[in-house]
Length: 234
Image 1 (cartoon, rainbow, N blue to C red):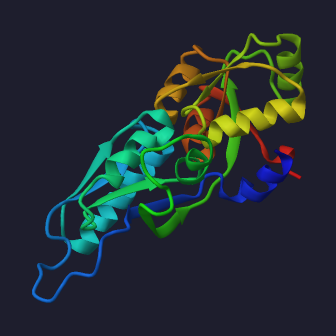
Image 2: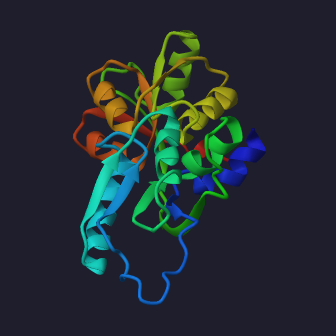
């Protein structure tokens, strides 16, 4: 696990746009691309970091291509429902998706999918990279990472950790955290980081492994507690 993390930590929240790879160059006389509005499929619920980035990206794509870009949230199964939706779409370049190493690497490694994460998609661009944080509800007794680890050890199996779904980067980060710190807690999978953050702010879950872009606004507003995770990486 340590070697896996060392190899992937720099790509934990790399976001990539992918397009059905069967799309071929348009023949002579064909309509110019795009011939219809573009659908950008987001594999998580609205309000999370992937969704936010997709909506920013959709505005730029629309402006550059002079077309309409519809953002469609297809959450569930750690992003694989959205993957299947795009893999089945007509390969004309007008149905695209946005994801990260969890949706387009990890899912293919641990789940039996109705599509091939390599053969059925073509990477277009790396959009962003960021930092992973461990964040806690505002009323959490621990005020720093050392105290948080001590609190988790004093309450084995009782704390709850929200994730964007089973098998996502946040879930793997949590498993790695448990392994490195010798703690034990329960994972609560959501249909995206947005819904998980809502419950964290409301105090319905104790901690969350999350992208900084999603957590920092809540942290700055004093709604949650946050700690950087890079201390765990060799």
